[in-house]
Amino acid sequence: MIEALGYEFFRYALLAGLLASVVCGIIGSYIVVKHMISVAGGISHAAFGGVGLGYLLGIDPLTGAFWFTLAVSALIWGLMERAKQHIDTLIGAFWAGGMAFGILCISLTPGYTSDLFSYLFGNILLVSPEHLMMMSILGGIIIIIVALFYPILLANAFDQEYAEISGLPVRALNLLILALIAISIVVLIQVVGIILVIALLTLPGAIARFFSATLKGMMFLSTIIGVGLTTTGIFLSWVLDIPSGSSIIIVGVCAYLAVVGGKEVVNRRGEKVDKTGSGV
Amino acid sequence: MNQRDPVIEIRDLSVIIDGQAILEDVTLTVRKGDFYAIIGPNGAGKTTLIRSILGLIPVTRGEILLFSKPVSTENRSRIGYVPQYHSFDFNFPITVKEMVLTGRLGRKPGIIRRYCKEDLVAAENALMRLSASHLSDRPVGELSGGERQRVLISRALVGEPEILILDEPTVYVDTPTEEQFYMLLASLSHTVTILIITHDIGVVSQHVNHVACLNQRLFQHDTDHLTPDMLAQTYGCPVDIITHGEIPHRVLKKHSERP
View 1 (spheres, rainbow over the protein chains, first blue to last red):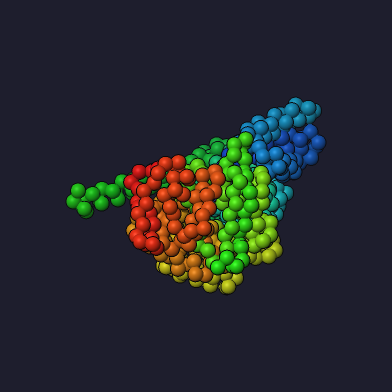
View 2 (cartoon, helix red, strand yellow):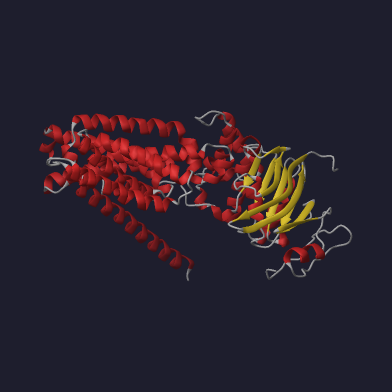
């Protein structure tokens, strides 16, 4: 297992996992507490339209996904704020609409679209230095923006109406949040792929919520949890020779279930102790 | 007394939502220093009235002035608002201190708003005014109903508002806490104008100095106590009231049933 570290691509994979964990930790926690998981799901699937467009135009599919998801999140925001469309409807439209557009683009692209599968399901072992650079820059942007705007992001997530009454620019903030989600998704596509992104955005935050009483604490803890999940997943994928995206996600789901189960057991024990203690 | 500056002026306000009239021809003046209660049954348009004052919903007819000017982001930030209790996700990972501090954000200029020492001091003071200092580092999810209510008021007060508006503040508070709660509001009313909206006529205490009844229309009376007629008009049925002498000590009798 350790001999894997001798390979450059493996070290790149671990680094990509680390960058992905920072993004999941920060944006994933925010998505979990603001109940925006399905919004993130919609944007991530819409990203496939960008991948397809990238193939068609002959540019890097991830660069295509970057601009396309940003455009989609701005469009969702506009339709939500201006046209007063319900977010559920918009998710439904763009989730499938983006995928449909991507498939159309790919069908129009001449020749064989080689690594399409890795955009859908991720392949962290194939991450290139260029993509690592892109992930670092986008990750850095996310950290800086969230650190700068943390108080108003927190206020907006906890009680948007109060934030609005206080005179905070909640509409602009909501656009910022959608853009941050779009950027995160682009960072994560290389790691777990468009289809599986949503689990990586959700699980570390959901696990961290059990152990942390503040959003800031959740962000730190879920970053660490993310590193644990991605590293375990990458090693399992190497040792068992299974797809890395699915091994990372399966490790994550198992960890989540274990924590929920463990919590239940602890609660039951607590109840039993209470009962015997009070003599009932 | 009537020479005091008006802080909220509502003239002939009508709000129609989806073709349904929620408020009709409401006229109301709240003056500086008032401790004003608006009572009315569920569905009377109480929350709609508050939301119009805060500029959260469009006004169909009439006008609302805050500090003699139309509602704007600027004058709205001079209001401390305590929203209805159940509009919160109390499982949100936030501590009491963090939550109270968010009440300071509206006062800060610019795009990047970060807390300074002054904000931390203001948050501590606001919690102290509501005897909630010891709760400062607790997650809001672990608080009792009464504690949550005090923390919500601290958040409203931390921005040093000139008006405090409370929407159904005692819904989840038990009766002894409710008494304490009104004592507390009464002490706050020496320094801030208070407008309270409730469906629970039992809570309108001796401390309130103006009462109006809302049921789509507003029945306003130049009086500091409720009369059976006022209530009957609002609730559409006679309501029992016990008064003690000329100046009622506790104006209303508790109801076991909802009118």
